[in-house]
Length: 170
Image (tube, rainbow, N blue to C red; front, side, top):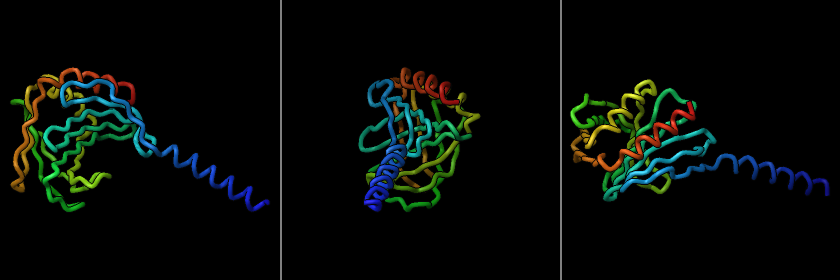
């Protein structure tokens, strides 16, 4: 009887622990293929983000409450990506300066291939201002993958909700 009680108590503790590691985000606003979201990550950290999923592709920008960087994740179902390999990525918002990064190859939980890179949090305000005032985001890859062009004109409301969410998690 005592062993059963310990076993049940251990199972309850494990369930409570693992339930706290479940991501919970809510869509704050949607505009065309763009959405802003906020909530908690798999690790329980506060997160705000914006994303778009046009034509079997994905672009996501996430700000975690406890980091000095923000994370950009991109995916194209047609890619053949090697996990942890390095890929040079350049972004341009309209005619603003180039944003450059070295992305790491990865796969999302659903198996889709992706690239992930970070930009310093100190630059988030500048990035968000450019994002919110630009009509086009161009993403270029040094390894020959096709250039992406994302329409930002419909994403204005998403950008402002993302900025408001970020102000709350600083």
